[in-house]
Image (cartoon, rainbow, N blue to C red):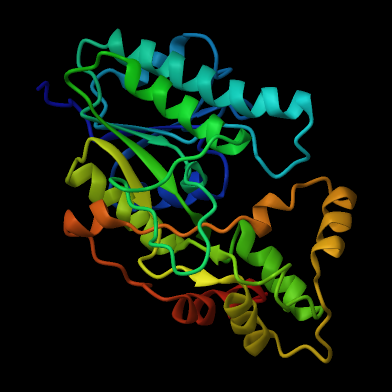
Length: 310
């Protein structure tokens, strides 16, 4: 396998919360980071459109790793237009990155491609959590996108590059993503169970997310990998943890019909809240990764105060 000429990490779609945290980690390690971005073109940013080959592809030659995080947000209404953009943005970026890697004289040693734990079917009650080997994959829109995304990723013939699909759960951090939203809502009294409250939440602390990415670069694992803490939590229990931190004067109920109305008003989908995601990181643990935040109480206690600092 070709040896990379530089400690260069290329991150596609790395302008968001997760990409910025990865950039900070890698730069602290003394690595060169290049970010493929549609909107920024200065410094470490290289312009690309996520569809076509360009000068950006030169950064992959001799790189240590490629991390693809490109894809339109799913935090929107699932209109026909938005559905097409969600799917196309993932397929197109993965396809063109595959073409670029295939053209490299010294291809990246590892390619980590985003996927999602939403690939697994709604899993309720005491049913076992979904593992990579025994997880149940369904057929709705979100699961269909995830399956098509991974199919595009693994179809390329790239014998010199280890490819890993990151089936990420909800990544919890104080500086972005879902957690600050739920923390601020909790302060306003919206920290009751959402809908039935028995739906499972699979999650991962941002520190463990970054550490797991670093681990997978040092210990390459081909195929899908679940990125989630080993202990999912029910929605009602998660909101109880938020309530204990927020200490609101009143707690407002959140039945399903209220969530449906709110989703229309803020242009999102209730699936993001009501689907039961019960996932277990079997392969990550078997490979030797150790979590800093295994349980949600520790995660919430760490992140909640940080949301309101400054």
